[in-house]
Amino acid sequence: MANLNTLTPVAINAAMPGLKPVKDEKGKWKKDVQGKTVCEVVDGPYKLPDGGGMFLLVNPNGSRYWRLKYRWAGKEKLLALGVYPETTLKEARRKRDEARKLLADGIDPGETRKAENRARKLAAENSFEAVAREWYGKHSPTWVKTHAKDVLRRLEGNIFPILGHRPIGEIDPPELLAAVRKIENRGAFDLAHRVLAVCGQVFRYGVASGHCTRDMAADLRGALTPHKKKHQAAVKPEELPDLLRKIDAYDKDTGDTLTRLALQLMAATFVRTSELIGAKWAEFDLDAAVWAIPAERMKMKTEHLVPLSRQALTILEEIRPIAGRSAFVFPGRNRDKPISNNTMLFALYRMGYKGKMTGHGFRAVASTVMNESGFNSDVIERQLAHCERNEVRGAYNRAEYMQERRKLMQWWGDYLDGARAGGEVVPFKRMAG
Image (tube, rainbow, N blue to C red):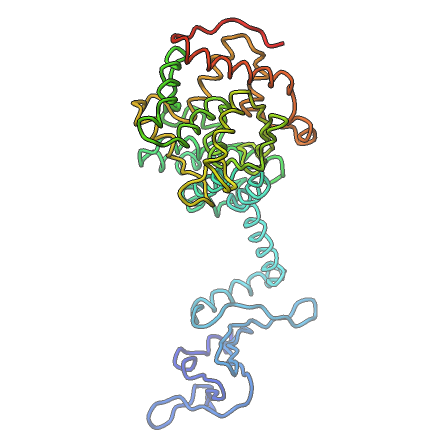
């Protein structure tokens, strides 16, 4: 092709705002006696042609752009080929030649570029990371903050760097397994299972929302190293009486009355540790004998009602003067904040229950005793707040089985009193009714 590839690196480097390299009568870049490229003074942007419709556009601000001028359907069009020097002269010529080949085949390179951009945008929107963040945005508002942070951190730290950019519909099981096995290779077997479970939720969301056709995580069942789930330590029912008596005597040994009362209320209500230590007086209706834990403090993100036994009310009456004017039932040294998560756990350690009992263990032992005593399992599960509320009926379900739950909680308060006084406890059969 005539007059093709006329630009040189020297001419390009000499091209400056307001100074345009010029050619001699033979079409060569003109040099002065010192061998420097001769330039002429120009105003505004200018073009340096390379042939085949390609030129370098030099702007007054110093930016330099590769452009290709061509005609399609009788109209003049421009195609961007890149920015100099990020796109070199050689690379710009390669792009020009590819575009001219498309033209020779009857294809508009500009429309091809638009189609490629649309495909890239669609791939980005359908990337695993994009779909995962969409799934996370829809579900995380229903989770407690710590769980939401854990889920996102696991994805950002373990999956996004490897699979985040990949279109979710193109990821296959071996590719997903390779990513999760990197976690296993660190010895984090439990985390590997958790991350795979999260990926499965993302894929299932992707299927439902049309981003992919199936859950690749489902094909990996049995592919990871098995791990034994660790349950939080809890005493056996027959060991409960001795524990209760040690709790009752705790402040006699340490002088820490508030911790003793916290453990007693934990035993009486078997709520989660975080729910107990964050309790505020405004949540309690002592006249109605009910504790309404707000949704934002619950694992299931819905309000939970705890009927208060006579024993629980007595404990709260003893706490009130100790808490003083603090909004928290169990204020810490800073009265504007509650006691720490470890307060009750360390107290159990001091009583000799390290590795044998935790705050969560009260839930386990209460569930065991109540189920063995013949209570309706649905009532027990509702009081443990294990059941996820129906989104439509949530406002009503918070009080589901309320009459039975009141009987259950009073029975449990009486049971604990009997355990303290009677030593060994053998659960007796009694149907809630």
